[in-house]
Length: 136
Image (cartoon, rainbow, N blue to C red):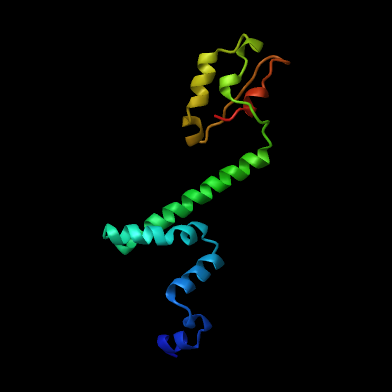
């Protein structure tokens, strides 16, 4: 069976390539591709992108959107208390805690990028769990 005869017998062959693409993207759950491919296609046409550049732009957008969704899910599942941030942390409650050191640590992501552990230790009742509830 040739490629053209397969295409004729396919019920989706009656649809335009754009309609078929929409159906396939939905089936593959590529939400960024689905919502943005026409905009990216227009930009690619205007800027004479190669096929690889066009595909890369769509793939990067899809990866970024999935990363954002994964982070949002993780934050929801973590059930962190609302309204807490390092800007409203009351360092006066833990006088032995150096605010400059804590803020430097909070603003740095190097320990995350290297997948290093961070330890918070001290005497009982000094609020050690509290900083772990603060997003950057």
